[in-house]
Image (cartoon, rainbow, N blue to C red):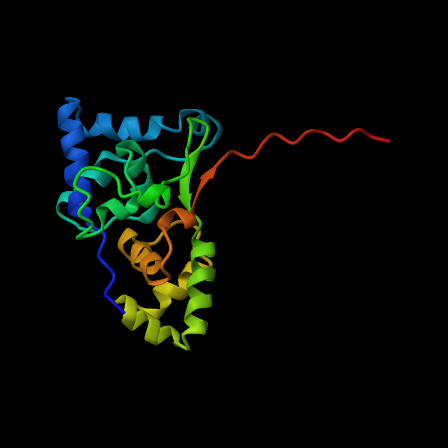
Length: 192
């Protein structure tokens, strides 16, 4: 099996910086724009916005959470696959006829990785291939606990690991990304 292409955090940072520069924005303004993409959802939730340091730290630390990366990809209008090393997609998005397109998301929604669904698909293929967790971890260059932890993950894993997993199971990242919507206000049931 061919190696999985790494997710290129440096290329993501460069794309963000190029767009930031072309719009004459500070990193604080970029973080604000990322957050404002989901302005209606943010008004209904008590989440905290992305810090500008999350963006600027990418220049020296080639790691980013899979959930934070979705904010950036949405702002850039790019797919996760377009940032795989060797994707050859330049500044465009790798869409393969729409196969890699992320869900359309308005200001009332936010993109999120469905980590439990990713875990289930990975575990199914692991069983089909007769691999132990240690064997799969060696294939994906991580620890077994990084893989088994996805079953109960509430927040995130690294974007590079998420993308190595989707490549290993031969599915687009979009299959495991959904658009969250705030819980609607419950409608009271009429009493009989």
